[in-house]
Length: 218
Image (tube, rainbow, N blue to C red; front, side, top):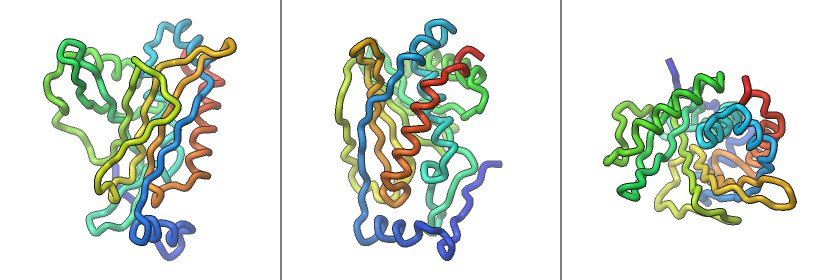
């Protein structure tokens, strides 16, 4: 059973930072990066996979490597870390020009997750509710996609978001430049959960996953 493991503030190296960015200066921050997706895009084509589910799995895989991006709050407001977190992602309804948000359990096996996500996207493509599933767990994080446009900066202005510790990811449309395929990615995270070092490390891990996409063909 998935559980939220409380963090021992007496020994946690970031205890002072957590308190500072939770109480004294509560804030989130956003960063937008361009990932080199040249090899990943080629692997997706060769393996006849779907791009969006592949991107979702890659994000979920690197998020679950780092406790800073798997955090939540206990009932009494103390920080904790989930054993595993699952992606919640948007699916567009082209007829209504609206979107729904659905979730899929993270699976370390890419092929298993990919096929499940493809089925979910197909099933809920015509959803008329924003949240068509009734079983969303508390240990999710959000991913959205803007395949209609690219961007070099993106920030969500969330009112009173000081208790929202999970990261929020936004994917943009591929950009082709100098023979490379570039993937815009915006990351929003509570400063109480992660510093710039942690976000930079996550981005590096994601880039390495894009650079060595043998997992797509498995």
